[in-house]
Length: 469
Image (cartoon, rainbow, N blue to C red; front, top):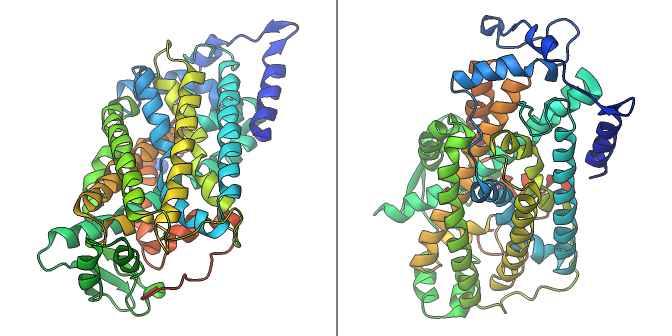
């Protein structure tokens, strides 16, 4: 927050010259010569000494004509939906585990503090954008990294671009892994043989299959009649491919991973304003399914694990929670395509406060409901130990909330690469849309999601006890 606050202060100083607001030199903008050259790998250099943000008008207008950028059509509800859906990402599914490890005081306090800090940071960033010459009403197409170029020069922009891409890639890869695991469970659910499949790339390539452990079948039958039996059933490791010998060192591409790519890659090539309809469907599913999960936690019983006020392992608290609130990176893309009558403060604060309440309830109730919370709690809700309605809800949540957030992240990343003059149209599509799918399978197995999301807080915890765990 201090980082964005410092940027806003610098913006205020640079936006005033001799007591008068700075004006945009449109003649200089119109004299820019477009040097976009896809034949040279898609990388673009600015003309002469002009900054990247000084040359946005001509190129972005051309990109819009080509359908590569969207128009200002996102209303208030669509705006809240876009921000809230971005917050409710893969970091949400690890919160019950975080609460079990760290107790309820520290995670809850950090959630509240980060909620306020991230909301203020977002509004500071909007203020910085509005003070850029010629952009008081966000009429110019300025993405996240262009702000840094405007006030800190090309070096600042390059650093910001690198950090932005790392952040968006981390969110996208974690979302892909979380979804693929649950889609594999869904394949088991639909398959009469209760099996899913994968191509194991290393060690030597060959096809493998996975079915839930045999002890799950009688345990799942008993779980339908007793809370205690359900709690014991959830102690069995039923995460796809995680209980295979040498699972930590396996590299595989699962059937669920392939199906997910076939569904989501086409959506990732849409524009943001076109994607809002999909985001609204995702938001409705978020509300309904979150309520169902909280009811299931209550029905499961909130006495299976006593969550202390203070725990023993805080290594994943900060990393996991900050991961949830990394939505500031999508704010400029949203501003570029929101309607002018949409309130920034109402959009941001409604989304963050609502999401924080949901996070606290999910983390605390999920931690109490299970003796051992999974690193991805959707695996517990979607396995055979849960009631049918909860399993179906978990499958829908994985695809409808986390899954449909993947195209959104890809679109924002593509915008940044394109408008930031890092890549041309084809190259930006490759790096933003295709590249995450080409690398995410490397961390599919071995509990990579929980470790990856919480990596900012320290090393991963030791494996939890339990049969097959």
